[in-house]
View 1 (tube, helix red, strand yellow):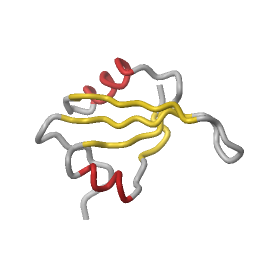
View 2 (cartoon, rainbow, N blue to C red):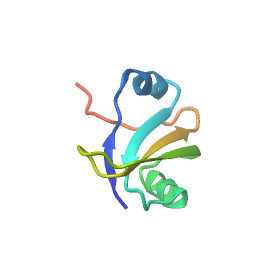
View 3 (cartoon, rainbow, N blue to C red):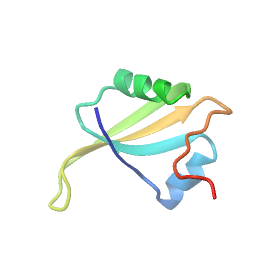
Length: 81
């Protein structure tokens, strides 16, 4: 299982404030596997939404996943300054 990257668009950054994080993952990853991955990070997953994205010339096929966490849980995406 592999997290490819974090999606940091304007909309995704606004959703982070309401504990929703957007990631690109491998297409073969199931929701149960993602819940286990985030459980290992020490956060509780409330809900997962996923969308399969088709392949394009510039990128292979990915799955876009929006992970909703319970209130109070946060994922550190970048280090504190």
